[in-house]
Image 1 (tube, helix red, strand yellow):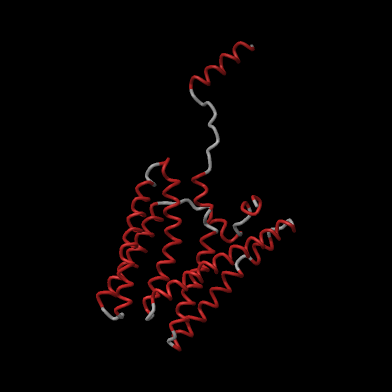
Image 2 (tube, rainbow, N blue to C red):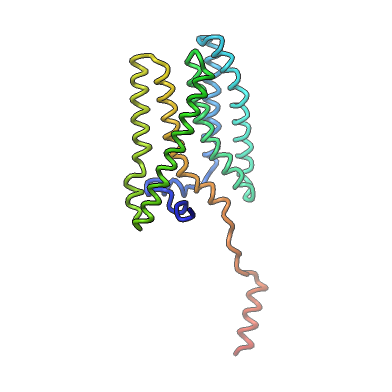
Length: 233
């Protein structure tokens, strides 16, 4: 399993997986959640949704405010070297939860938002798990063949296939106006993005790796070395 984890990231995502977090990572998260919160408030203010949807939308306000607060706290932690590893976790998983919130918001367009949100979450979770397992199988096969070409060549097939199916569902929704296809489309897109986001997890691990012990580079250490050299002459 260790070998699979070490070779999990495909060549395409290698550069992204090594990219360090920055203040921009937290700003982007805050802007994203703030925008989603604005959509919720505008939807409530417009009053176009039914009574059930309005009640459902109100339940999203507090969690969204909490997420914004948590990201702000994470941004503050990121300013301290020893706390950056905790800030990295906050930034990373806020991206995961954002996709779930988007799915939850899209469910308010239906007459039964709670049911649609639940079904959407199940589709996202199952789609993500299947994608990760599929990729593990590809990496395992590549290791047996002693070549990562299989991983790199077929690693994007699942995400691309799910994305195409999602797009077809959204197109059909625009034609038929059937809510179920909107649910499936947005859920599948979120599942595909989650699989892609999984390849970025090494960005978090970078901050949790133990640093190698530094060699003695003090003046005292150097003076001892010079004394030993003098005696050996």
